[in-house]
Length: 119
Image (cartoon, rainbow, N blue to C red; front, side):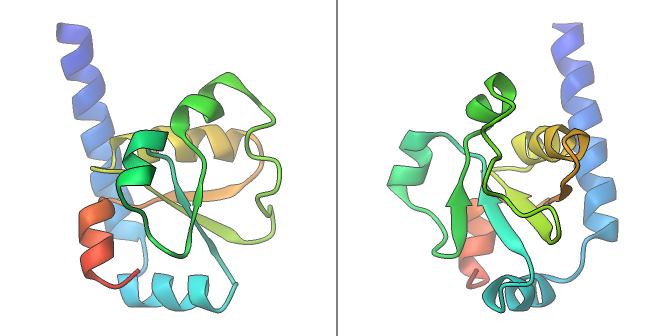
């Protein structure tokens, strides 16, 4: 129980620090639309099937955690903005991708908020 609480607190702190350093959503939307950045959804298949952002690529965290080849096809020369439902999985996914040499950035906003913002 304590371990889960510590992990949740750590993920929350990481999400908050990402929020301070990530660009405004309008800028992210523009760079993704122009092809200068990539938006990745790390939610699982049932969540994706229930609704997803048009510009997002599907790459579930479970695949990222089990296969080093899961990220093949993502560009290493562009920022990769990662989102999930609430931000926690995005932090984990960004860390995994950074270790593989990607410019991965977790978004503190979840799917619902990004959808409302027109991403």
